[in-house]
Length: 349
Image (cartoon, rainbow, N blue to C red; front, side, top):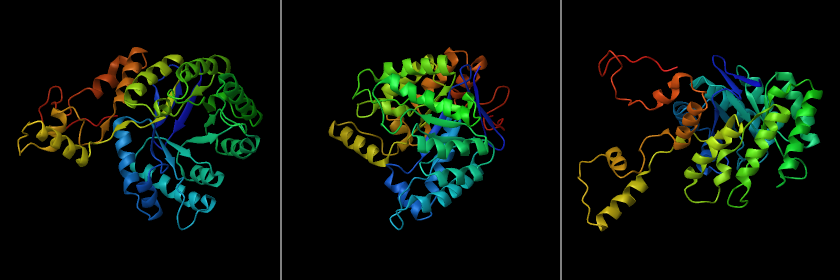
């Protein structure tokens, strides 16, 4: 049975068809996050620290680290990304003990990350272009790490799932030429937005089964792509992830954290209630307020997608004795068995 081993200095994560689903936390990525990009250029890593801790607390198995910010002061990523990648990896692995996923389109940044990371990180990524294969696969071999293989090549992303399978097969075969085994290739079959392609979900499920049965590889995806542009994206993601798991997908790059309710949202809700003539006690704290009105929480916590994944792990017998499900549903204020509230609690593994 295929096993993809990813390690930090102290912790091992295993991707496999009979293993718990592997959640790769995506938040440490400045793409589309102007505030984070500005912070990184200014040497401020406070958001990176918060995102690293919050994602692990929410249940991330790995953390993706992406240094792809284009500096206003220097737009050349070949110069700026490698040192930034080293700094971010040093910072993150000093805060958390989960394995890392080194994410960049800049080869020098990939190698900088590989040289800095402790253990056996996952490399993200290689595509089917011949030039990219000749650059990235030697790094994979040199550092003996697994790699994400994205199913597109120099022709772009095909809407035909057979073409995407052929690209994945090409990458697996080319990797074998470098002495890289199939169990170290994690294929991303590319999830299309369901709003743009009605068969996107069906395509992925079929592709994942084929990749498992014919190539014997583990798989991953950018989970939120499937719901792009549609309302209630969490509802779609919550259905998609267990279905993908049932088809054989073994990991996903995703946000495991339900982001806190902002003060702006709280103020808007209070204004709506006031217009409706509903009086909120002046001494009601914000957390009680958002809980009472089903808005979520003022604190970062495990998201609904994580709940769906844990339930699917339980239902597929990849959660021995239901330990993870039970633990995740415990009241944090509940007294330990045989003890009393406020006593010393056992450290969670």
